[in-house]
Length: 448
Image (cartoon, rainbow, N blue to C red; front, side, top):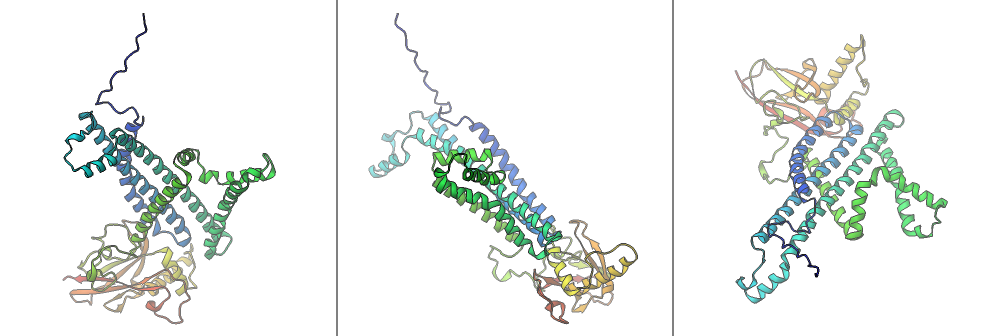
């Protein structure tokens, strides 16, 4: 009896195409979960950054800034990756569903278009099965590229944070405190130079090196020096697969373009937090530091986040005393205290000398911040040390006496500084001090 060839069962139009990536269901579930998680993680990172940046001076602020910049870039990369993946998978599901309902595909005899438009449509669409396969491949590759970008940003974050932390520590213990940036540059050079030299020698002279020779061992040492930071096995496997399958140049161009994109997005958010730029178009009503602007940051009952600007309880004040809180900003104010009060010790000592130093610090605060009510200086006796109950910031509480102030609109001013460490002019007023950036204007209404 002749062998009977088994007939291949006809595929159901409702089945998933056989060429589909096996992990497509896991990809879809992971995308949905991580998009939700990243959208919650992004504001959490903003909150941590705001909380810490008001407590650190320039040396210790830089590790925080790089940690925020690169971690924010990683979060942005993940959000873009998973949104792109969900969109691609959505189109893929739509095409698979259409093919399940109409398994014969497009009936071009019933397409009501002119001959030219129909010919172009046939050329663009081609085989629907091939389009489904391309979308499936694109969705899977989006995962790989997204995680490569995350790996690159996190590697850069580790390097920059470690170098800036080390430079801050060395500047504090050994070198001058203003040399932390030079030390950071040296640290980066030590990390990058051996790897860069190894890449160049291996690329141009690698075939000429004797196996096991001294030169080859040195090149290996150069690669191994950067391996803990730049050559992770999980990311290197994806990278080598992409470069061998897609092409090294195309892969490098796409990855670097995406890396620059997420870094720019994170940098724009970082700059926006400082209030240095605005993308809105409010025109004439965009007034920042003015006596005519009621800034919600200056009123405790209107503040929505931790901020470094001074504030009073509310726009309407009743009672004899007004509580003004002025946060101490280490990155800016410490330099002003050192410049305007050079004899002031860096720390308040313990014991009997503490009271005298505390009085000197409060007197210096009155000189540095120079608060005025209706252009009348607030006396130093009104100053005390205090903290912000919400943001746990430390600073100065100024109890402004309103006994002789009439009802109605009042204006409180506090000196505002920028980061500048020039020597102060002899006998200069607070508004003429180095780094002076104008004033904070806090208008309020005295109620009977």
